[in-house]
Length: 180
Image 1: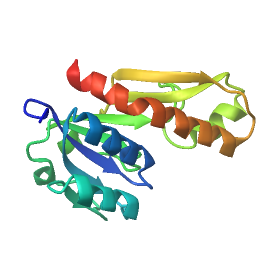
Image 2: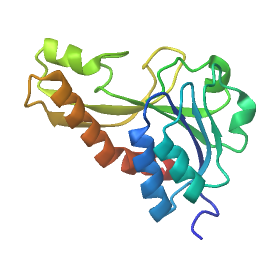
Image 3: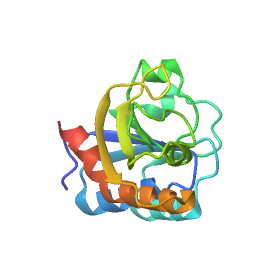
């Protein structure tokens, strides 16, 4: 088994978790890191719970968590916020290596509704950024990003293209971070 000296990663989500599911599936094949915890402030999709139950039986899964508890991250090297829509408490940021997937090319478009704002401002490129989490919203050190040319004026079409870009590259960029 390839996991002996690999990093231990916990995940935070709020939505359907499509990026997380892609990450879990790729990691199940490649075994680049060990998954410790998956926490959501909402419901975790049946797809994720089923996949975790089948292939990640020892992972702690917690739904409807109003606040993050340090003890849920025991033995965690890195916490990856993948679509987690709450501010992460300073006591977590100060005690763990926390990174975030943000749906824009930071430092532009911090916060919510990034695609809508990009279209309103006639931006030429869209993309995502993985950055260190700091006490300031979407303001931590940039680890990596990926960009692509905008070729639509339709917000829902741009959101689909954006999600596809994330699905294609987030796992690789996470693994690059873990090994560097």
